[in-house]
Length: 237
Image 1 (cartoon, rainbow, N blue to C red):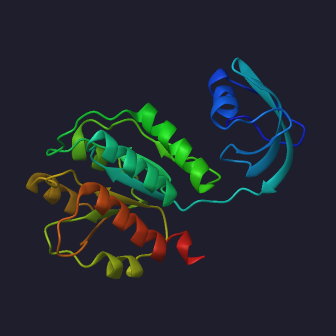
Image 2 (tube, rainbow, N blue to C red):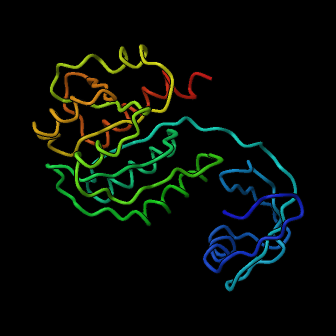
């Protein structure tokens, strides 16, 4: 919900949201809801009216103040549609702040529906009771070269390197300094030798190993994100 949230504010619901409330959730006038907009925390709202054509809420009281999320991005090459959905859903649950899809030399599935992924991120945020919704970038064309060229130098890029000569991820993460970070996961088939050499020349890149077995792209993404949250993120709180 993008509207500013304060006690007494009335919010008109579009047709789609009203339909979901009335038909799917079977809510009616007088029922309470919990709403958030990513900035103002969580609020209790009361449904004033709801129908197939639209609805209206009134904001009543704040239930939870805003909470700052860990500053961690997840960069990945698109995979099959249902696996992309899995990455978005579980990555949202695990606290990813930004999803950054990129095309690589070995990317087999070159389409990525960012609008659909944004809807999946919203739904996952609601399910997990996050007070924000992660950003989903449009698919970045131009490959690793363009991504590295435009990369913010103060953001550590944690590179899941399948070559086997990087230190274990847990060991590396424990030794890292706090600060903005991102995780980079390759496609099915991994990064090409050209890409791997290019990535490892950058001073902001930290390669890590995820063990002796080759993990699927979605498994690798969520494994490394879980490790980062456990060591450097809000699982330590």
